[in-house]
Length: 391
Length: 133
Image (tube, rainbow over all chains, first blue to last red):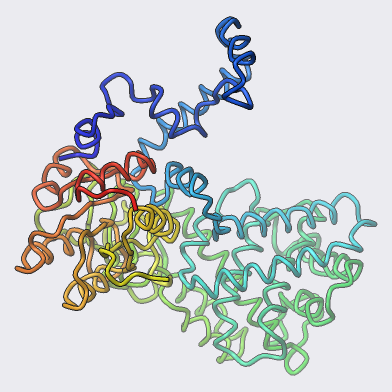
């Protein structure tokens, strides 16, 4: 027996064919359908009469547009393969006066907006940078809290891959990865300082108005380091943060820029930032290559082989020790719209685990065990994480 | 204060907000909720004979080793749990065919996107012949 049958039995035909959004349902889903104003006091007969004499409510064009938008949202929600907390649940929570906790998504959105604001100010209104560090500091705490609660990096990284804000996303993603890598190494500073440095390490690119499509060996590209340092000094960022940003293209071999320094001058925390930001770019490029049907590379192995001589072994080891991006037991949605459970890992390919199909693309639970190794099936990728093992 | 004589409901769902919503609805119906965040946790709680549940709310897409389907099969294979009413609540867009299959083991399948406080309360009242306390 389905919900609608039971309700009908109870004498309340909520789900009659053709009246899906009719009065009883609308009153329950009142966030979707605006209602005409009701009198303040039901016992006020005069007011009732006045209202009854009024012509039928004419929806304003904006209301009609809002209704159309609401209808589109309902349709879109119906098409979604999986939605753990759909609008209906939020509405129920609102109705029962349950405070809605700030989601991880919200924390990340806030973080992104904060960096965008700082980057925009740095690029357009350098003189107003003075009071911006507080914003970055606040964001740093949010990110540290997000990662503490949720070590499943893929869950947060996958949301930050739009091309429009490439440098911005790179900074945010680097901060998230740093928050997972940094606890594995003993460094000269606290984790929050490295996260803060990661958030702003490429602010110079924003100021110069260039991104990673620019020739990286060109002087103008290299200039982004010192341009960023200058902006951070204006923001009165902590000294160690400025140092990390200044050193994020240096190597232990002294082959980096802008100063070609070596340890001990080159700090361990700077090396963590440097390796992490490089790893993020390898992952980001591989993700784009995967979208274009090119072979997916071993991200960790590639980062380690490129930078074997650039960083202290303890820094390289810290990257290898990052937990699986999709820990076993995590539920994920694939590009073929199936919902799968992660049941195994492929070494060096944290984004391409082995999965078991739980709901196929047609909305059915397979009768027989269906296992897919995403490392072997290149045409399939994970779109998003649905549930996460680090609750 | 918690009344230990209140009928108990087991909510197996990893979504905190869903659990909070259900807990308030059930408390208004005079029932006490216990929560399991994974399938294995739910099975452990059901097997504990100190916990006799009047009803189970089961999410299908649970993190961990056991999915909702596996929990459902385990529960129905267990003699002392075979008759326990189960409401499957899911955010997954499952097919009609799948819904029918689920209804062989569960009493009701509720799509979370269609959830509404009043209709859900009535559903529970009808299922358990329960009056609000």
